[in-house]
Image (cartoon, rainbow, N blue to C red):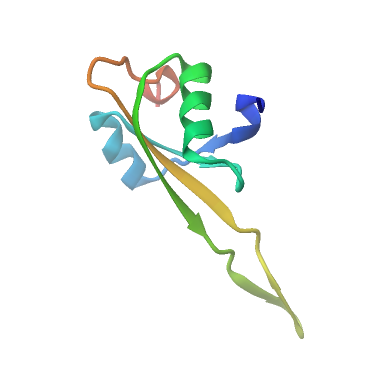
Length: 96
């Protein structure tokens, strides 16, 4: 089993993610090779909550250029995690 802290990289703190916190929906940037089952178990283990559903999205990195050279930023993966109705919220987000 993988380390949960290697799966959940960081929270995504945007206006859209703040709006979902009232409905117990949280957004995390996760490891690019993590699947939904691993993400669910990692969130449950790290924060001590019950996860209802997990939706993921892959974002291709933007093309950038430095002079004549073109390159691509790193691709990312985000997970939208919805908690069950009877689950408590995540304290980290409640303090924001």
